[in-house]
Amino acid sequence: MSELTVEFDSAKPDTIAIISVKNQSLEGLQVPDEAIKFHFTRTGRARLPKIVSPFYFLSLDPLVLTADQAIARRIEDAPSVRSWQSDYEVTEFGVVTWQEGPARRSILVPLTAEIVLLDRTTMAQVWPRSFSVGSPVRNILNGRAARRD
Image (spheres, rainbow, N blue to C red):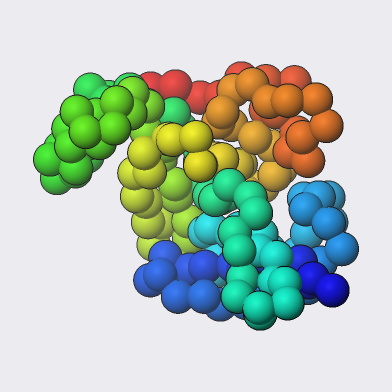
């Protein structure tokens, strides 16, 4: 019999919690305060966990930026942005922000097919902008538009 779990990671990056769940629904999911990312895994007979979901990034102030906007906002990340752009054809980047003590921190995340950007407060999906019917994630475009710089 297999076990479904959700793994929460901090910005360090450290795994801060692994919790057994019944399904991949985000409804009622209790996210630890220090988590900025999570994903679901399934463990089978071999007891080796297999990732069975995208990587969900949680942001207090989610933004979707073009490569040029990302570089203008975080010039120190320009080489990484250009590399993702040229090597993997990534055209958009997410700003993931979180609270760390009194300071607000942020990172840029390349928005690929394996990434879902969520508004931490509402758990609404900011990226990708479209989703398939039956997705466990509510699309932010059903409520309010994603902020853009």
